[in-house]
Every structure is written in C-alpha cells, then in structure tokens.
Length: 184
Image (cartoon, rainbow, N blue to C red; front, side, top):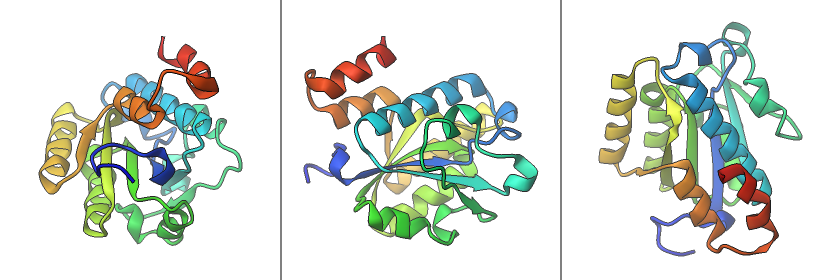
C-alpha cells in the first residue's frame, strides 16, 4: 500500500452513514450532500470499492434515500441505534471482509455519527478520509466543528473529487471512461 494519506482503492471501503429519507431534509444544503454521496457510491461501484451502508433507527428516520439504495446490490444496510458504526453488530466484520485499511466516510451528521465513527476508526488504526462535500449536519456550524475535530484527531479531510482521482490514479482505461460523464 502507498503512503497512508493517499487512497488506494484496493485497501479502501466507502462508508455511507445514515443518509436517510426523513433525516436528510433537515440537513443544511442537503441536496448537495445527497448529490456528492450518490456520486461517491457510483465511483465506488465502478472502481469495485466495497460499500458499507448504515441506517440510524430506520423505523423512525426512514430508510436510506432511494437515490443511494437503488445503486447498491445486494442491499444490506446495517441498522443501528448507536452513534458510532463500530458499536453496530457486523460493521467491523464487513470492513475486515473488504480488507479495508482506509475508510472513506460520507453521510450524516458530521458532528455526531460521522465524528464518532471516524474517531473509533482512528483508534483502531484505520486511515480515515472524510469527504466534506458528502457529509452534512443540520447546521453549518456543527458540520464545520465536526470536520475540524476529526482533522485534529488525525482524519484526512478530503472531497469527492480528491477521493475519486486518488482511487483512479490515471486518466485512461474503461473505468476512467465510465466515470468521465459523472464529473463533467
């Protein structure tokens, strides 16, 4: 594996945290967060990066947004009531099955579930990349503070295009051609 700060898709997993139908509309600039998250899922699928999806109390907050759920087969979200995904049964097993060393994290809310998952991942020795355009909170202040806290703890602050181009590595091949329409 290359330098820990650069993503290697062979050792990455995309973690999609709680992008749910009833919670999403309360998120500041939610349309942009959803769009960037959908793109990250599309990028991961094209590049064969494993995807792990969680849902926080789906009976109350609804299922994962359909724009995301419709892209992932087989659909197997992990239901949780804990804020950190690591306290959810089966989460770490999915990461181990994917041989993930770097977690590329998207979702909501930046200062709650994303933050606590990132901190627990760092404690366990994972490289953590926070895709800032694909994370959100109900207030921009909480998003900003959550991202800064994760940065101070050792997470790598990134964007969907940074993650994509690090996964791609080169502007050639069928994968690049498949992704090109998504980034224009």
